[in-house]
Length: 120
Figure (cartoon, rainbow, N blue to C red):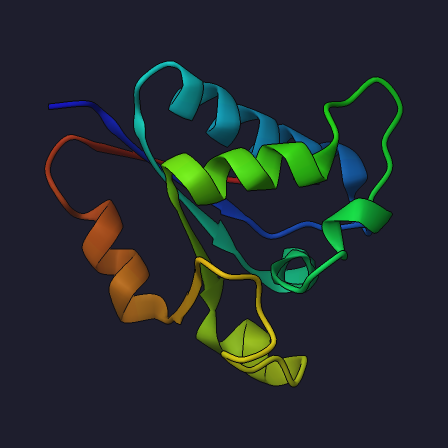
């Protein structure tokens, strides 16, 4: 059974290096066979919307749309319920494959056996 990694990214365009690191670590872990769950919280919540990842730029970093696409195909991507509500983002607004869930689901994921959680 593969190791599970849960990555919570709290930063977006407000802290581009931290944001990029979270997506890069999650996508790299996925490419290395880990079971990956990425949580979009805080300012990263905007990346749940179509085309928003394409607006993100950071020199010498992998393109965020590519990282997000790989995570949507091979992992799980979740948008925080409260973060979505604060931004008036609903289930019909998000990219296909992104679920909206809250703290109880996050806690359930991170308290499972053999799970590593990282927060950026």
